[in-house]
Image (tube, rainbow, N blue to C red; front, side, top):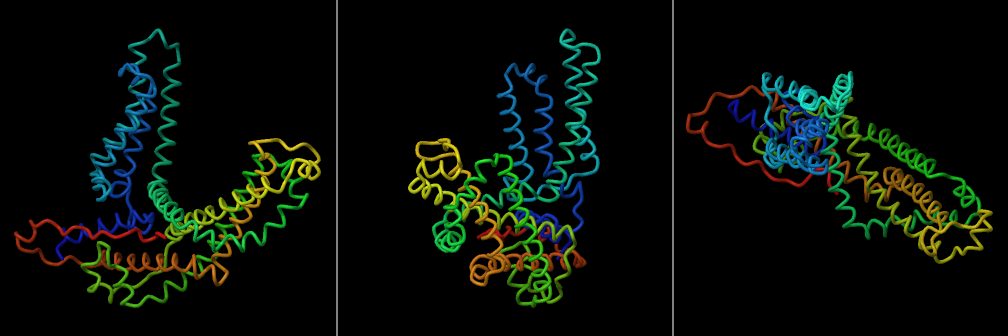
Length: 411
């Protein structure tokens, strides 16, 4: 394999890892080589929004037109640099990176300066300095957030989560059919106790929201503890045939048979473990949320049928407040609280209970195992010394198209 073919294969494999929401698996992820091109469409959007007032004056339109203009241009820029999402953005040369970053930080302040010079009657002494300082602070914060988000692939993680939402919704009846009976068995009796109704009567929306955050934190901590145990097992049980099969349908498929016998699954670094934790936590939370929505609707319907106004008054010590005809605010709060308990219970039990684990968690572990195998072959390809150059005709031939494959971490 010549150096050009090897570089193309590495680049496409890194894009494959990025699309699985695992950018931290990319070796030597640099700012110019992997980050700047992906984050620049967002930076462009921030620049346009920051310079909103001068642009409105220049375009002769209100803020809605300016916002739509910035969204369209940012989207077009992203489609261009990613070839409509099918190819990785190219590395950015040093000189171009300096120009892009400088333009990002200078465009909005320069636009404000020009606008102040053209409309001096609208500015008082010191106004321009304050505006420029505020704009630079906003641009710096946005730059840092974009850098961290891009390095951890939060946008790819969001898109990955949306695909899982669609899959879980398609399978929602099967999921709810298996999960609801056990969950309702544990929570249904609480719905008819006066204590929980009295508790939610004095529970504000903020406190209820903090409870949901607490439930999510428990789920993440449970996933983290379980993930460490599972990774130790996965990293020591990879055979050569498994490594080769894992590369089917990926950009590494042409070299899998050659490199799999030489590849070895190495221990993950902390950043890579955090990346897997993000993906796995989002996967478990989304699936558990589908169950939680089912529980919430069930208890809402149950309250509509069984909890009359006198009954609710005797439990909460006051007249219930109607949110909708027949549905009180207290019914919604109790249903939401029990749904939160159900989400936490299902997410944790799906990793520990034998039947739930077999049905919901083992498939996710198999997908993680595949990603670890692809990473091992990818790292071995990086270590491989390029072969001699091919004939001119071979070098000029276009590279083989990248094999298409479904998302690895999909339901």
